[in-house]
Structures are given as C-alpha cells and as structure tokens.
Image (cartoon, rainbow, N blue to C red):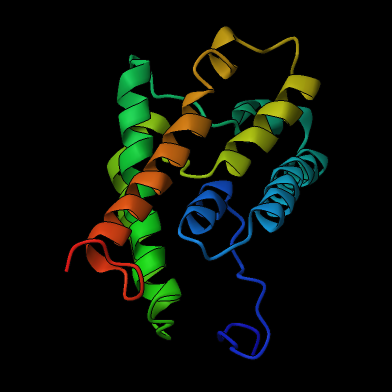
Length: 188
C-alpha cells in the first residue's frame, strides 16, 4: 500500500536540492518554500549520514570512506563537473517530462531507470551524485568522525557536487521551457 503513488496528498517527495532548484526555476515551487526544502534536504543528508555512522563500526565506516562522494582516481575536476551536469540534466529532464507536466503513474519508473543509467554511466567518474544533499551530509559527518584518516580529496573538488547538479538542473529547465513545456514553451 505504501509503495504506490498517491495523488491526494503529496509534498513533492523530492529530497534533492538540485531538483528543488530546477522546480523553482520552472516556476513549480515558490522561492521561499524552495529555501526551506533545501535546508531540510541538506540536514537530512547530515542526519542520514549520522545514522549510517551509528550503525557501523569505525573500521566499517572507514572502509566505505564515510559514504563520501569522491571523484574517481585520476579524474580531473572538469570531467567530474561535466558528468554531474549531464547526469543531473537527464534526471531533471525526466522529472519535468514525467512527474511535473504529465503526472503519469509511470513517472517513478522513468525516474528510477534514469537514475540507473546515470549511475552506470558516471559512477566511476564522479560517483554520479546528482544530489548536493547526498554529497554534503556524508562529507560533513566523515570530516567529524574521520579527521585522522581524511585526505585532501574529501574536500578538494567538492564544489563540483554543488555546481554541477545545479547547472544540470537549470540547463534542463531551460531546454524544457524552450521545447517541451505545455504552458510556457518558448518555441512552438
């Protein structure tokens, strides 16, 4: 019963600040509400990471690097940035086309398949975060609990995980409004 989408009560159900930014740019969420969403999403990432830390021994936690989002070995910042922009673009475009405009019952399936493709394509490059909240929480908590084991790579290119998804979401909204939007299409 809980696994089926319900139409009579919905908060939007997104836990991704990049999606929130995109929906705000598309005019689907008021800016003040978006700020509250983003704060809650970032805090959710921290609390989720604290829960993971509480469930694992220190050695287990270190072996997964605290769940931190990291660039692949020998990956340059621009490669990770491009990967994050493109994967978030695909995710946001799918959200806009299936969950926002048409509200099809298959939207969760389309979004899920998009996530699978994104992760398979960019997982080895950037970790395929597509979610600043998912990247923020684990790095904050890992910094607290693994200070002695931290390498510079935990934070050296971490801005990629905020800028990339934000740019990808905004690019998707621009393309959506240009070609696909039912109400606000710029090109007919």
